[in-house]
Image (cartoon, rainbow, N blue to C red):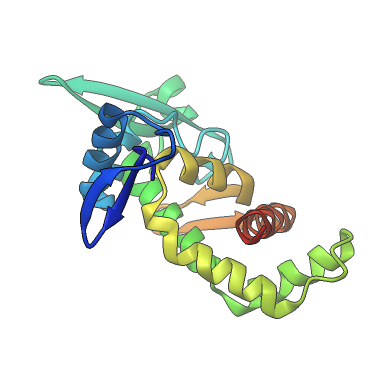
Length: 202
């Protein structure tokens, strides 16, 4: 259909409708889709601005800054405590963490939260309070569960947008990571998912 073709018994024939995209764009899109989602995410995440910028805080509660270094042509990204930058790396217990590791942990945490029953209940309550009176708890549960199943298929830029929408703050300790979620962000996400569903049904 996208190429202006019709399929009959697995064979493509010229269709009566105009193509939507050209063959080159089609081939390029399918080459991207053929790559496993986790590898695609790893290779493109470095091109996305720091996922946790302005969200991640060190053990003393102060924000950590994104940083990077290059070795042998490869870029390595980090989040660094302000003390380490200002006073030296030997002045604090936690100085820096690999960006990919901490971002991966936060992404996993967000994905699990989307299916947590207590968070679904909180989101439903907040949605009703914000004027979505007709939405049911079951609808919220289904919307978030469906979204959680496709999470790993999202491009890193879309995951980053969702994290900025949902995450209020990330606190890093020497042996723990705490993620605080915005209830209003979940309500916004549910609203987006609901609108998408309505558009598909129309």
